Image 1: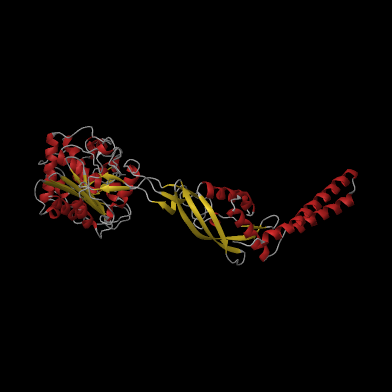
Image 2 (image 1 turned 60 degrees about the horizontal axis):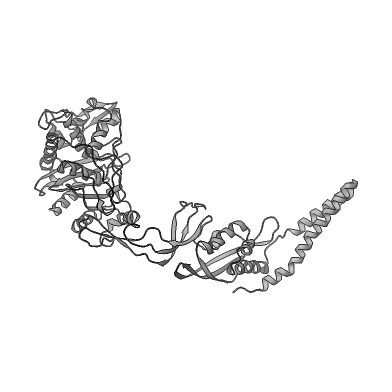
Length: 559
């Protein structure tokens, strides 16, 4: 413990300070009395005397060893004894110090504090802290090292502790505070559809999913939160962090996890993880088409859940939705001739096909299978600005921002656009944005005949309501759309990837150009039997060559 000698020395110097103040007061009285009689010379002499006294009061020069140790002892002793006011008065910012030191006891629940000073060096005094953090019936020892610096206070030059939050704890920045309490949402043990535990050790892609499950179901799954001492950021300092952000310093007790059962299939999830392993920008999702149950979801890069939350232009996979609209409006028919020129200009933009190909006297089926851009763009003059938006919402349940999957998702975006942007949206460019979950749902809607909102946690768990679409396609339109996707899987741009998949299947490829990227994002969406899937490989190139093999392998695995 710090020596008490410094405190005694301060008491011996106190009368001198009081005498200095008294001298100033006497001079002030003399000046006031003389001013009544109007004596200028004596007034000037008195003013000079007052000025000199004030200058003598301001301490200057390097700090003495006694000043450093005495000030440090005064501060540390008061803090240890719980005398917050005295400790704060020993600093050069009493208000800030008092607030943080009060919170140290009241909010952080730290007690039985022992502070031991080390050897001073150039005004800096290191010290160690031993204390106990106690919350309700839970407690745990707390030890750490910190340091303070003694400086001369502005104005009077008195030695004071230079105040910064880091004096209280080295992890604190000015504006931060310490809090002990329940650690947010209780932990959650997520289970697959067979009751096995889902962990990031087994399924690395699920980190963000597990975090989202805890956030949504932590207080509903029957668990209890742990107790933590944590820093709550104030958003100040040179490197500003978001105000309210938290960082755990000490875990007093672990929480008791509740359990949440998901729809994930362990074998398919493992297969999905294997397919994206080593492909940092690859993401894939599998659904049961008839129900919307999510059977697997994986991301090659584990920092962001692109599979559920990505917002990317889907390229030509969007033509599934556009084709359904053209078929409904009698602007296309599967086996009738349909224009596929090299170029088509609309809204001031000149659109073209990949490698500027054209299909002379070809059918709509041929154009869909080869992914002819101009076959779709050429119909833009016949469409209203909101036609595609309505089709996406009313039939496919997209772009309504109301999916309730059980974790955070992006539900697709098909905005109302005009002129060239509207035309570009027909081929999955412009303002259209999707992710693999959205596009897997598109194929699932085609396979099942109606939209079933995807979900990872059954709605019966928490009584939530799933999103619905307002209408379904007619039998004729649905049959035609299935024929288009089936032909594409067998003889179109998806044929190479889908070779060997077999059974009742359909697919569509896509490549989405992105400004600043050398290669487009490769997309693939498909179904086989009652399973639908979609994937994207960012900057991968053609979807049939990049995302296609990933999706096809999982469809085979699903049987």
